[in-house]
Image (cartoon, rainbow over all chains, first blue to last red; front, side):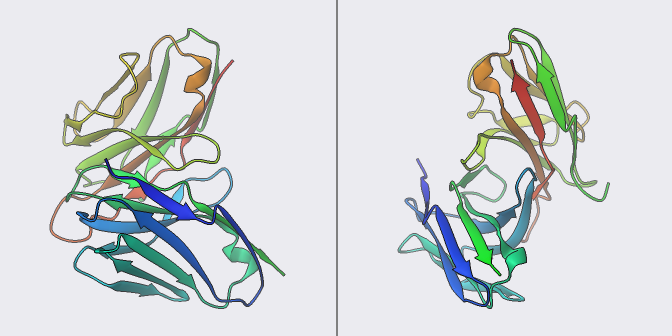
Length: 112
Length: 115
C-alpha cells in the first residue's frame, strides 16, 4: 500500500527566502507525481506534474524534482512571497488513470 | 464547463438523513474521482469512474456510500443514514485519460456537516 509523507507539517519563513518542501513515498512504482496548492477553505490547485520518466519540472518560481528510486520529490520555491502562504500537497499515482495517494501537506507561512 | 463544478458548496444535515453531492467535471474528461478530506489531512480516495462505470470503488468506507455517473459526465455521491463521522469536505476531480500527463483538476469541494 502506497504511503506518502510530507515533512515538515508546517513551515514559517520570512519573505524573500528560498525554500524546499519534501515529499516521500514508499512504493517507487509510480506513474506520475503531482504537487498542489490549497488555500484555506478552498479546493486544490495543480502546480506541477512530473511523469515517472522525468527528473524535474519548472513553472515560474517553482521547481519540482523527482527521484523515483529513493521515493522522494521536492518542491523548490524561489524568492518566497506572502501570497505563497498556503498548504502544499503532493500526490502520487500508480497507473495512467487510477487513484492518487496524497500526503497530509505542508502548511507554509511567508511573513512580510 | 471551464472547471470542475460541485454543488452544494455547503451542506448541513442531521444524523440519519440522506445526502446527495453533485459533481460536474470538465467537458471531455472521461475520468472522474471522489475524495474526502478531513481537517488537517490530505484527500482520501473514495471512488473513480472511467466513463459511466466505477473502475475502482475500494475507498468507499461502507455500504452507506454510493456514487453514480449514469451518462459519463455528471456524478452524484450519495450518503445514506449520515453519521457525525461523515463530516468532511468532499472533493471531486476529473482528468482526461489519454497519452500525456493526465493532470488532476479539482473542484472547490462540498463541505458536509452532520449534526
